[in-house]
Image (cartoon, rainbow, N blue to C red; front, side, top):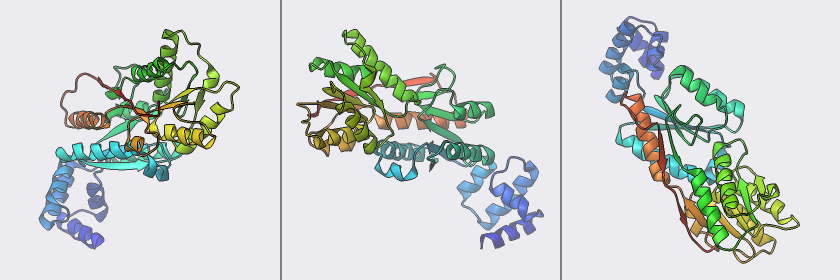
Length: 336
């Protein structure tokens, strides 16, 4: 049916069916006069809703994109991204935009998604997450002049538009809390070592130790993937040390809960033998015993600010300042 419709549009507009397809796919190489002629027929036939046709006239899709470097199956168990996506959708809808989500496990697949989005202009702008040092995505999007906002930090900090927590400061708050509880053998379970968020929270952890005169011990720092299995594996490694830690700060709640379960499986009492603190303050924190102490990073505000800033960039409105910090706070529960 769609092919017949396009054939009819092509006949009435006096162009080829290939040209109709290019117009409907928002190909920027199509002659503007020809584009308007095709769109006039599109609207007359009701081939697409009026809003879609209007967005094509403006060369906008009214879609914003979010691409995650994760195994798509793992996203079903990631409460941080579930909440982030939900709040991005809610905010975008207020401005008559919609969210296009994709995920790729491999670096090659991740890069291919971005290249396809840039080539086709299927979305009007992108929200980036989990930045890396010398991030290829950021360099490519900046080179193309494509609108994007990063949830995270990037150097130099005034180079791009970002919304972030003070991850260094938040990790310092969590580590200082554990120190105040009497711990001096405190471990850090990070995500992949190349991520900015992993490094920033490690920095905050180290600064808190230094300020309280506690020597940094590299054997207390373990990295893993974003999964409960990664947290369990990290905790297993830590508990095999000659002097295992009495407290653990984990990069997110999923890692923390994996660590908690592994500690209990090995006969450790939480928090009597080992205290555990996570990040993100997801609903999982109150679904385990003991309830998980966690740093709340205000996911709704992160999503809302990033989405509003991106839409402002897409529509040509000024955005200031370039970097916006969303406050975080420690939520104390019974795991620490």
